[in-house]
Image 1 (cartoon, helix red, strand yellow):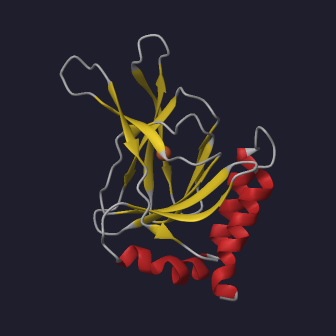
Image 2 (cartoon, rainbow, N blue to C red; image 1 turned 90 degrees about the vertical axis):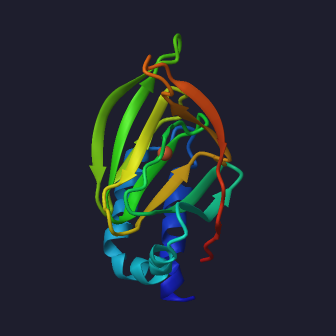
Length: 192
Ligand SMILES: [Fe+2]
């Protein structure tokens, strides 16, 4: 409790305050969350350090959620070298920031007509850096922990409960993409 837990409340308050609008200002949310992540890095390391030591694979932890307006916050733990498939976010807006470690994020645009995916660029996120996307069906991305040795931690804010999403694969040499529904499995809840 006390100061050790208040970083979670700080992050929750930023996300809740800035997601009250129908179209949240995600650039502002990214700046404020990045600033909190930088300024409270010692508290975060103390609070979330155990998640880096668990070594239980890729895990999602609920940090906070609200139904009206809908918003959910999660912390994800990324094993060394772990990469997601290309995935969407169920049509929700979202913001993803690195807490510890470094991630590569490659974004794709989905063609509404033939459902093909086209890479639209890569970015690299160190501690406090964020990427975000609006509520659209066409945005997808693939993320990878750049470290071969250390677990990375990331903070995710979504405009609702991301219980289901689509993962995309290219099973054959034709380059054709297939979408498969996935469930978000939650490891537990982090309390403030
Ligand atoms: Fe994502």
